[in-house]
Length: 174
Image 1 (cartoon, rainbow, N blue to C red):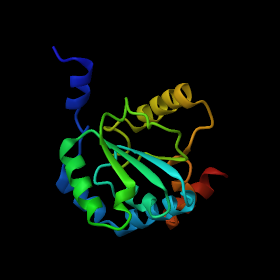
Image 2: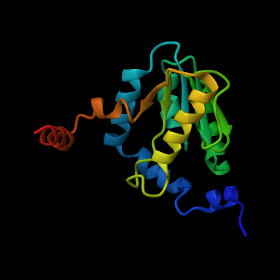
Image 3: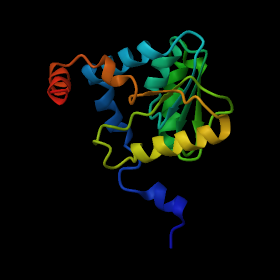
Image 4: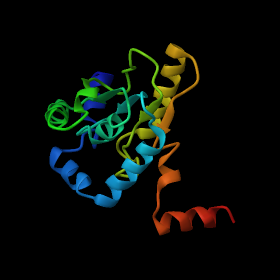
């Protein structure tokens, strides 16, 4: 019988293989929109937390302005790759890659922005909704309010410049 932690780790889709990350990183439209959202909300000197950081690319975007970024990833292969990639890039030294379970980790200090991007499979496999709700509850218990700005929840939608997205928003408001 698996423990709850072991069951979580073996959950279908919990970890995306490294080669799949390459496809996501090569999607210029996807990456440009995430960079725009991050640039929109991260301010000079901010402290940022990324949950489920994968390769660390979104943390690296945040490090362009932030003073410190905590990048949390449970998959050891991805942690290793993220550390290698960040070491080769400007501002990579501002990103602290932490091998931990995002459902359990909280930073040692309050943060201004929280990034959690697990929407490539429409949130069906990676439990983004549950993770964000768990984070909010645990963060408030530890630090009190206010909660940090959350990407993509709070800002991705404000920066998405795709015609299909604008059309969907305008049809919803009718």
